[in-house]
Length: 399
Ligand SMILES: [Zn+2]
Image (cartoon, rainbow, N blue to C red; front, side, top):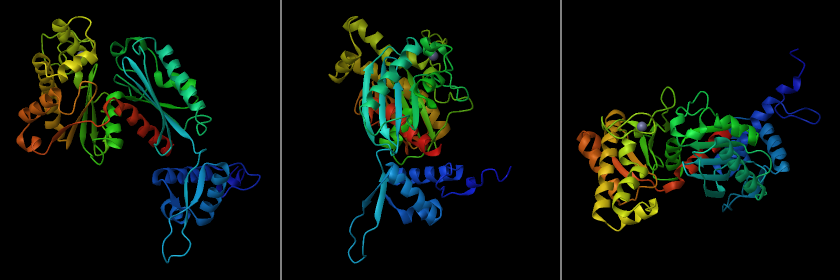
């Protein structure tokens, strides 16, 4: 039996042989290296992959023929003879899909395997409704947009989906149905995977926000930080040594459900007095409607805050202080370099961020706060979607 498939040891493949596992691994290694470097010479590929010159030459020839890689002339170098020809990703290299669900929106991005965005679309959607309908809408959006992009034919190389709730990292199921009522009993990763014909990774929206700011935004180059998302709910992505810390069951960073008032309002999680009941966008709207009328929208509320209305500024500042007190406890435990604050309630110079910063300084030891920056994210509402792009590119590379 050992000799039944001798070609499996032949990394160069060959006419009449089915592609061997070794050959597939060589292809993956070379495509990943080209995706990571943008453009690279064939001799550099030999050096960084450790593959033989003959294997690299053979695989590159096939990939160029298939359109997955393209060869182009490198920059001229005076006195160094002919410049090396450089390889970059071709139009057939594949693509990745990122999906970001909020409680009331769906965002979809399609990117090439180097993470360059090809298309992005946002739509208003009642995500708290039936998961089956919501997932079908996502698939229809992906198919419509991929069909319009000539480089995005066939199945995506990886799909990452963000959802606004804690995820069981083993099963892909949502941990609490009370946080996303229409999704109770569903396994969104499995359901979406069946619809798109590809494995789907599902991730908490705050974790993706952290990954987005780390890949494209305010936390580039930072290894230890906390991303705090203040939106319809509150959550945090904890990044330790450059990686998301999920905890033993995937629920690390759920700071919105830390109890801050023993006799506070009932929370949708089933507890009461959670931070989220005091400081989220929903709770801000509830307070401001008492003064400005029931018809007040969230955009109206932000306009009132930005107009320096004393009551609204005080409200947002107090909310920031409440969030900052909980964040300070996390900082005392984890000692991060930076707190990046994102989500739709946050302005770079606004009272919410100021409140968080003040509380973090007040409730941590000076040796923690003196080295700790509290900044607004630079990606705004796109942080989660771009984090899903970064994560999809990573999964496409390590398959
Ligand atoms: Zn709660």
